[in-house]
Image (cartoon, rainbow, N blue to C red; front, side):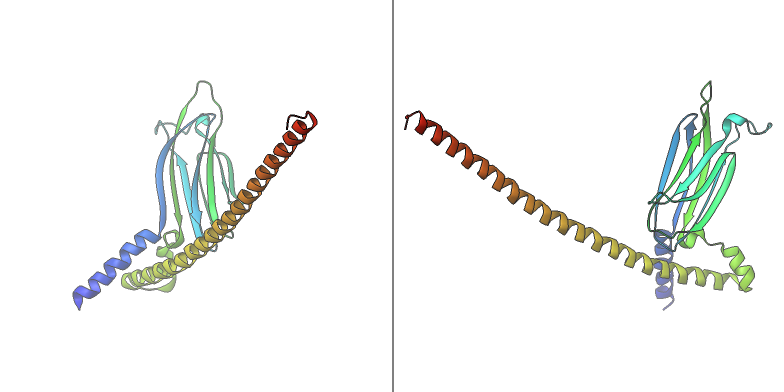
Amino acid sequence: MAIHRVTVVSVLLMLGFLSNAVRSLRFDLQSGHTKCIAEDIKSNSMTVGKYSVVNPDEAHPLPESHKLTVRVTSTYGNSYHYAEQVGSGQFGFQAVEAGDYMTCFWAADHNPQTTITVDFDWKTGVAAKDWTNVAKKGSIDAMEVELKKLYETVTSIHDEMFYLRSREEAMQELNRTTSSRMTLLSFLSLFVCLSVAGLQVWHLKTFFEKKKLI
């Protein structure tokens, strides 16, 4: 029984790691260039992000050449966050639209060209929730917090499965529509080709008859 419980918990934890979208990375950005990072987020999901420029010289303030302009937009182009010429920042919102959300970083042109190193941490779903505050507000112990995490993880997986199923149905419908249109286009193309060939034969026959060659 104990082994069974451990196995169930292990599976749930593995599913939790798979279901939580956590993107933490460090990248270099050349001045005068833009780098965009996309994340597929379903509707009503919470997402939080934090970014900062790595100071090349900790003994001095961040130079003006190492500032970023950051914009977060939805798949339909709606803006959810905008910051201009900043060294660090963060954003958080609940997605209204499902689809790819884009975070774009732009560094102003500088002469000579500089390379800016950026730390970016992006979390969505269960991973975006502040469980420390949840524990404080609810006055619950560590075990209850873990159980609440597992419950919300399973709920997130359940919602994700329905979301993926709806996406799959939409893709299947798109494939069926495309297939039917391609079939119709193929028959139309064949009809046009046969019509043109028939007109050519008729024209040649009429021409040869006028010339009394046949």
